[in-house]
Length: 276
Image 1 (cartoon, rainbow, N blue to C red):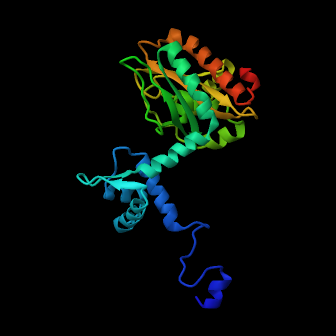
Image 2: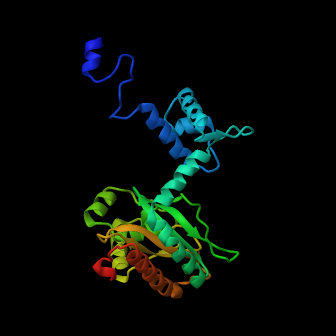
C-alpha cells in the first residue's frame, strides 16, 4: 500500500491492520486471561494454545508479554501458566466498584447465621451465573463455591432466578435454539419444562434447585432488582439435601426472597409486581 493510501486509511506506515477497531494482539491476550481465570489449577502452553486456537509460538509470545506486566505467572516446576497478582487486583477492583456486592455482604452473613447454610451472591454473564460473594456455612459438610466460578443459568438456583425475572424478549433471545445441557439427572433440559418452572418461580418469588446442579445439594435463590425492576444479581442459600429436605425449601425460599427484597430496597431498586 502506498504512503498516500496508508494515510487515507488512517494508519501510519508499518502499522498492523486493525481488527474490528481492536488490536488483535490485545484481544488474543485478553482471551488467554479469560481461559486462565477459568482454570485455577493452571494450563500448559499446549493446552492453552489449543483452547485459544492459536499457534504455540504466538501463545508463548503473548504469555511472555502478560508475564512481563504481572498479569500471569508460570509454575517453574510444572510449567503451568496461571493468572498473577495484577489480574487478581483488577478483579477485586471490579467487586469493590459494584455497590450491590458490598451492600449484600452483611445480608449473606445474616442468612448464614439464620439458616446455618452457605449464602451466595451471583450475577449473569451471558448464559452463565457467576458467583461473586459468599459466606460459608460453619458446618463441616457444607457447600463451597469458588468465587468467579460459573454455573449454567438453567441448571442452578441463582441462574434460574435471574432467568425468571429477565425481560421477556431478552430471555427469548437467550434461550432460542440453545441446547439445555443436562448437568445432573435432575437438570431441566426441556425448554417447555424450564419455561413452566420459570413462571412458577415468578409466582412464588424464589427459585429452587433440586439437585439440578449437583447431586446431594439443594438451593433456593431470589433476585435483587435495580430501579427498573430488572435483575441486578441473585442471592441464594445452599446446603446438603440431608439438612435442606423438600419440606424446608419453602421456608428457606421465603426467607431468601424477603432478604433479597431488603437488599433491593436498600439499593433504591424496585420489586416487580409478581414479588412485591
